[in-house]
Length: 151
Image 1: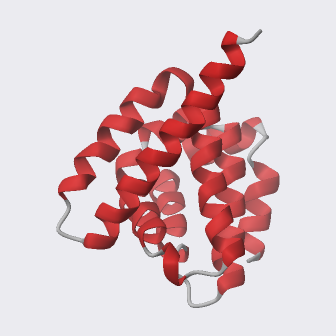
Image 2 (image 1 turned 60 degrees about the horizontal axis):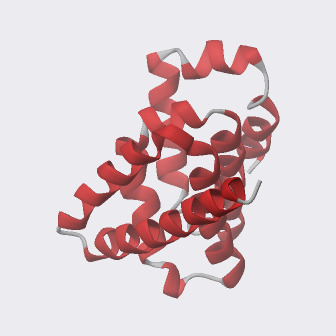
């Protein structure tokens, strides 16, 4: 759990971008860290992982967009299994999607398209997660569009 707290505090620093995000080896380690711990047997670890992911999305949305294909199956599988999760974890997953929809901006079509491809997955939890993600993502983009239109 300390790793995610540390990642969360490092996300806003330039050194984090240079050392982790722009380094292919560290980049793979970061994706693997998130992918692995989304299914940790301890709920608090999952919650810390999701909380850190929200911060990463907020700080580095382009990074998430460029690595979405690697991260999406894991996050969508968790989203598809959300009926078996605690309410606080379910809400955090939905917050990840809402944050992604809010900050993605022009990248949203890339995220939308690559997520749509996962509807053909053989894993039913990934399919369910992709459907839920697309629904939540569309709702988030609609809210953003309405807010900008009212200004």
